[in-house]
Each structure stands twice: as structure tokens, then as C-alpha cells.
Image (cartoon, each protein chain N blue to C red):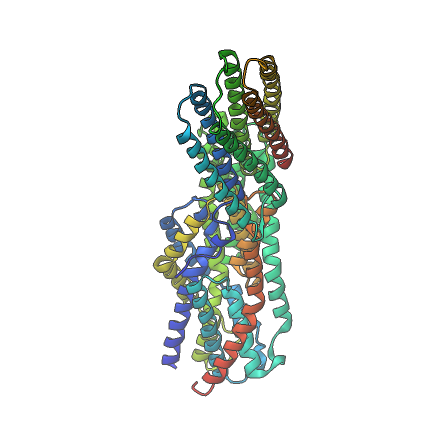
Length: 224
Length: 403
């Protein structure tokens, strides 16, 4: 005897559950960046952390495929499949970018980064961690929005988080400018390849912050 | 004739048990899925209330199945009715069996209506079928999921606007919850007095129903008034309130299911018993109450013996149903099925549940619904009736030589 077909009306996993799982991975890999950068600055071995981030990225990919596969069947959700897949794509891009940063760090060691720029860079990482935390919260809120039948309170919270991420993106811009100034003020002191390498790293973080802002805006628009 | 009577009771009883094993789990899926009741509680509720629903309210639908589909004036030989009753019952039982084993979305209601139609066509030709009744029945199959869907949509929207969208959902739920409980009791009492006890005094019926609803509201208010929660957990506390209310609506579902679906087992059984005992077509004879009791008992035993297995998969399979959704689905399903029972229309309670689930989905209340499964269910509506009719027609051709 099998079960009731009523339960088959409901997919085993909902798209929002998978997106939250995916967002959690994003938050986790971003938190891994802080010890990674600290170790990098201290010239310690970062191999283990790079592998860990890579493993998590693979896990995120599996969720991505699962979610895409879910939409091969026709399922009705309060959000359109197109919007959810676009959101997934953006969130996945962020995880990929974090993995890119971790791999990039393993390519080249930079000497001569003083305490001032190291502090600025770590501040940049902290801001990104905060932004990803809010993004995770927003994804959870998008599920909560369904549970509360799109209560204004939840929609307002989503809007506030989106504004916070926007503000953090502004902070990243300011920090990147400061770091940029430091880079160009050291053009005669450091190896040019190292300077380009370091600049690229900063630009990757700027790109992540931009994309986090876009992702938050998409999510905010999606639940309204 | 004694052998025929015993055989008919055995087949009808098996059919009722199959309905209990399979259909009850479907109709109580939202209550079990939303963790409002445990499987054990569901079995106890179903055992008692399916029986009560069948016994008190089952007569109208049973009469439709027994003498509404095939024109009884054209049946000249009571043996023909006995053979036809067996053919319809066995063909429907076969479909219920297949539905239970393979988890197919087959409706026992559709199967039995198809079975009776098949027998009528095989025995007396196309002209013997009361097509107007068939049109009403078929229309109700489309109307019941639609009505279930519409009602669940409206109920959920009311819950959303009066509770979930408020700043303090718990405070709002403490006010609205008892009103919902009162309305549920009002409807049950109204139906019980009108159709169960056959009372005719309008003012008495409405008055007693209103008082019952009011008492239920007051009791509900006192039971939940001290429930406290931190402001951020207001939604969880609201769901907790509805978890308690859902216990009542799951009783309502059981009662409604028993009232409608018992006819699928005992409609043909009643036809056989009346024909065998009176040795006539017996259109004017009343259905003996013991037949309703047999059907009710069969469903109840079916639930107790096998229903828990099906419910287990429901309980584990549905993770996204919250209690406010479950309540909307249950209330809409039970009200629609109950209304159909009162009108004597054999509707599929399972398909009404499906309609109610879709209604909440359209109110943006569910995270995801499998639309492909909905299509599969819709297709089964089209297929079940002709397949059951053909099976029944063939069985009738076989049985008419033996009886």
C-alpha cells in the first residue's frame, strides 16, 4: 500500500527552502573569507580553507541543479519561476565570486602590505560578511512573507534589509576608494604585479557588493 | 436469498473498509499534514465521526446512488437490480483497490456512479439512465472542487486580512479564532438538526444552532485568551491557535466525508438488500438504518485497520502546510461536501480537498503546488467513470445468469 496522492500535490522541497539552503551556503563561504584573508596576510597556509570554500560551492551547485530540475515539472509558487531562477542565478554568482577570491589568493603571495591597508581590507571583508548576512535574512523573509500572507511587517523588514545592503554597498565603495588610493600611493614601492593583483582582489569585492545590492533589490521587488 | 444478502453485506462492507483505508486519509490529509492531529487521533476521530456522518446524514446521497441514476420504473425484475447492484459494487471496489494499492487519484464516488451507469446501460440501454441526474452529478464534480477552492480562498483571505496582516497577529487571532469556531459549530448543528434529526421548525433549528455556535465561541475564547507569546513569535502563536481549531475542523471533515462517501459503499448494497428482502424493485422502501450503520462501521474499521499507513505518508509528505492553511482547506472541504450531502449529490471529497488546496495556493498561501499532479487528477476524473461503467457492464452481463 502506498501513500495518499494528496501529499504528492506538494513537492518534497519547496523552491524557497532550497533558496534558503543556497543563501546559507553563501553566508557560510563569506564568513570563511575573513580567516582566509587573515591567514593570507600572515603568510600562513590557506589551502584547507580554499578547499572548504570550494566544497561548499559544489554543494551550492547541487542545490542549484535541484532547483532548476524542480522547475522542469510545473509547480505553482507565489513567485514566478523566472524570478526565482534569476534570483538563484544572482546568488550563485556571489558564491562563485567568493570561490574565485579564495582561489585567487592561493595564486600569489604579496609582501609589503602594511597594517593600514590590511585593516582597510579586513573592514571590507567585514562589510561584505554583513551584507551576505542580510541577504540570507532577506531570503528567509521571502519564505516568511508567504507564511504570513505577505504581511506589511514582513515586507517592511525586507525593504529595510535591502536599504541596509545598499548602504553597505556604499561603504564598500568608500573603502575600495581608500584602498585604491593606498595602492596608487605605493606604485613605486611595491611590485607592480602585486599591486595589480591586489587591485583586482578589491575590485572583486566591489563587484560582489554591487551584485549583492542587485540581488537584494530583486528579492525586494519579487515579494511585492 | 440469504446467501445473496450475506454476500452483498460482505462486498459492501469491504468496499466501505476500502473507502476508510484510502479516502479518509485523503480527506484528513491537511489536518495530519499540518500536524494539527496525530495519526492516532485522526484514526479515533475518523472512527467515531465517519460513522456518525454516515449514520445521520448518509441517506440522501445513498438514495441518489440507489435509485437516482438508473430509472427504477424501467427495472421490471428485481433480480436485475440485484445483479446490477453487485456489478456496480464490485467494479467500484476494484477501482478503489487499485487506487489504494497504487496511490492513484481515483475517486470512489466517480467509480460508483460509473458502475451504476454501466449496469443501467448494459441492462436496459442508454434510455434507462436518468441523464438529468447524471448531469447534476457530473456538474457537481466540477462545482465541488471549484466551490472548495473558492471557499478556501475566501477563508484564507479573511484569515490573512483579519489576523496575519495585523500588527499583533496573536491578539487578532484571539478575537477571530473563536468566531471561526462558532461558525463551524453553527453549520454542523444546523445540518445535524435539519438533515440528521429531520426537524422542520426553522426558528428552533436556527436558534439552537446559533446558541451552540455562541457557546463554542465563548469556550474557545476562554481556552485561548491566556495564550502568550513574544511579539516576534506572534505568527507561531497564531498557528498554534489554529492548530487547536483544526482539531474541530478535522472532526467536521470526518463527519462530512462519512455523510457523503458512505453512499459509495451502501448505495448499491441498499438497492440489493431492498430488492432481495421485498422481492421487488422497491423504490418507495426506506433504506434500513442498519445498512447505514454497516457502511459507517466499515469505513471506521477501514480507517482503524489501514488508514494510519496512508496517513503516515501524508504526515511525512506535507511539510509546508501551516495550520491557518490547513484550517482554510478543512473548513472549505467539509462545508462543500456537507452541502453536497444535504443536496443528495455524490461528490468526491478527495477532489474537493484538491480544489481547496488549490484555492489556498491561488491566495498565495502555499509555497508550492505540483501543477502536474493536478492535471493527473483531472484526467482521472474523465477516465474513472467510463472505465468503471465498462467494468460494471461486463460484470452485469456475467451476474445476470447467476442470480
